[in-house]
Length: 370
Image 1 (cartoon, rainbow, N blue to C red):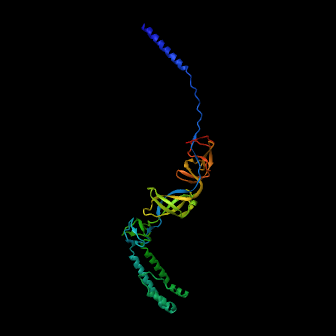
Image 2 (image 1 turned 30 degrees about the horizontal axis):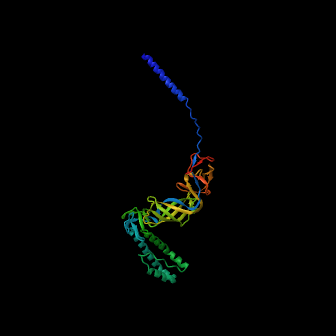
Image 3 (image 1 turned 60 degrees about the horizontal axis):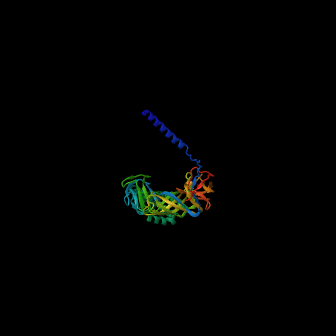
């Protein structure tokens, strides 16, 4: 009996399942419409040309306008300086930067002067006989001769014959040899040519200094120059005397004023840029500081600034006419870090303001409307 009941229940369940499946199958199926190909969305901008100067950013480091490298032309022991010969020490114009011991050389110079004096004295008797008209001026020369002072200029011969006579006595040769020694003696002491600061000091007092040895570096910290590179295409739009705004790269709030003082006439072959030199002054400026200058060009007419990533083939951008893309040739005026300054576009002309992936000439687009 139980077996029959189980079979009947199974048949009933199967029947119900079949009926449900048949009912689902007879439902009306929705009609699926095929998706059409979507039109890319274009972000556009209506051109508004303007007349304005172009700001040309350029970076460079400061170099003191007045700077000298200190070298010794003679040999001696470093014995004196008006102040400590250390980096960072200031000297006023005319103060002794360094002095080498010149006692031996000076003594030799005195001996040479004494010999020269004796030579002139030995010439005087013959001069009195043969050139009496010149005797008095040579006599005056001997009377004012001071071995401890720089050698005075020789009396001017009154005739060619007298000139040859003086030359035969080796007066001129000895005179110029002594003048040469006097010049060399002056090189034992170096004076500050301007008020400034030692930025390098390579020797200490008591050191033996050799000819050609580097002693240090001396600069005037009141005036600096900054060398920057400007594209050859833009350099004709600036000129010597233009005022320049400069900022500190480490602190953009720190501003300085500069002025173009020189523009090189040579174009760098590799970068196609020209070196421009800017003069600056400021109490907090330091040798080697890295700054950013903003050079202002002359006014350009009918130009517009657009994003740099819109450029196609180095000289074109996409314009939009009747929802179709067209390549438009432009003239590139200047390239900034993120933007371009261009000309060649018409007022109210519609262009792409955002780049489109896989864009091409003749591409159909949908205009984005806010």
